[in-house]
Length: 362
Image (cartoon, rainbow, N blue to C red; front, top):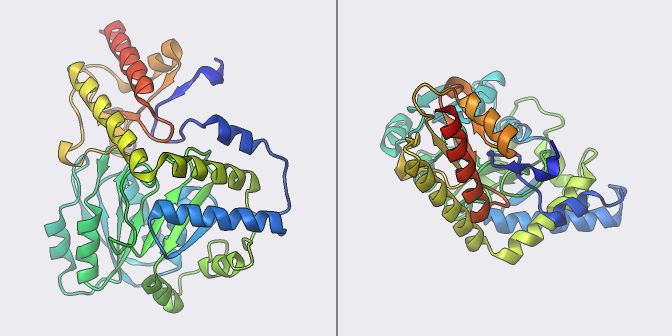
């Protein structure tokens, strides 16, 4: 298969714009010089625009999960009581990381396909004993976007920190870091930022930095205080992936040129078209429609059809990559990603191929 002909319609990694590909091919530079200092400062300011924050913003060379680990170990101590609000596979991951490093994790789990219930969260937080609340902004595994503003308000009212996994939603959906009072927010490069995997972005509120001063979980590579100190010199504490910084600078330029709200609208239009198309094919959507994600749509295959049959046929016959479920949803649902470079032509092409694929499997 010629990978240049492949249409990637999964919830990350996503397709790369030509400008980003060209940036990735630029010659290497030293990461301790003035040229890189200018790039990292430009990228940091561009990310603050996307995050909608005046808080500190740090860029780490790692996957999104590395960013989640950083978000846990820098602000918590072993034994700290935390509430993990889980609505899917990645909510489980965030709470699991906290538990591995010794946090006293209380789980509040909701049925996969549903969003978190704010009233239930408020009830769980009653008494103000929790140091932090952990939750996903957009749960890629189920195609659900949580009511983040309301969850954050409940967390603040309980005197706890908000630690938010916004890896899949940031850039493609509305996230207002400062307006919603989000203390620690993590995003990743391979989603709506239209980049390859390998960079994580973490915003940190003043309240979170105060917590960091007393936090005692072990950290080395993911020490955000060291990253902050290095940023003041236009550097990173350890060797960064300079090629991804070149690409990030270009992707942020493209996003700024299109306009933040227009990018959100483009993703919303693509999501609506996918959901409408899936229903027209007689298939059932998996996620609660009230909280359906604008970057990934989950749905059930026809009765008796293995999702892997569908994904394999889509790839082999149509050169379109969609995916199945994760965790306990593996083998039960299908997912179409519509993030990053997504447009309505790609959605139409994917739905037409899906229709032909299902007809061939009937």
